Image (cartoon, rainbow, N blue to C red; front, side, top):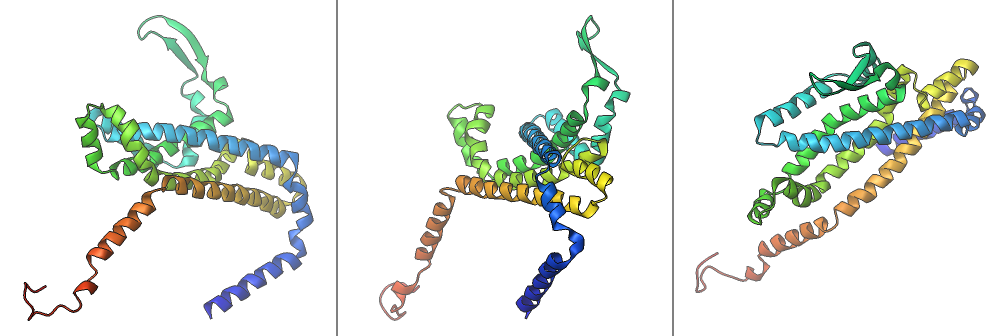
Length: 290
């Protein structure tokens, strides 16, 4: 009955979309390949890729710092994660966009000594750079916890064996621990990438011409609000679908051998717990009872 009800509701929804002339699918089809929409889509992809690159690299560094035995290093990483996870992303985007009002100029030189050069922050921080920094630094806080969970999932015996071979802590992390932790790190990282693609739409608040802001500018002129929002939604769906497919193959790559080992262990325990060879055994026979 549930399947029948769901099928009927899906059929009614599709018929409503097809027969309702207010959707104006011709307008949607026209703007799907509009050059302005495609430029906004390209900027969205660039922003997503650059922010994720910052988040992944900085997240790995923060995760290693969090696991450091030095309380000052681990404490600094904890404060960073606490701050960026505790404040809204939109607030961080707007803050970075107006950072020039706090620091109009940044000097580069020797502390308490001569200055070599001076940077105009207001001219340096463009909307794209502000959005990239805000999204990337915020993502680093979440990636740090993901990477830390992946590192902790690796058996401690791996680290002890590496230490016995004389490997340094950094070399052990790079050669032994991180490659094994990738199986745990990859799935949530893929989810974070898909989430980043959608979260990047918040840069519309600082007038960065991404996909959503471009659609907003167009429907502000032609009043085709719903149609342009459908266009933006369809492009987001296409991109997230492609990313999901890529995530599937990457996960399958890093899971190679894991399923085989799991299956071998399952077969081992099944064989160990199989009591069929003892089905005819009786307590009155010679030998100790089961």
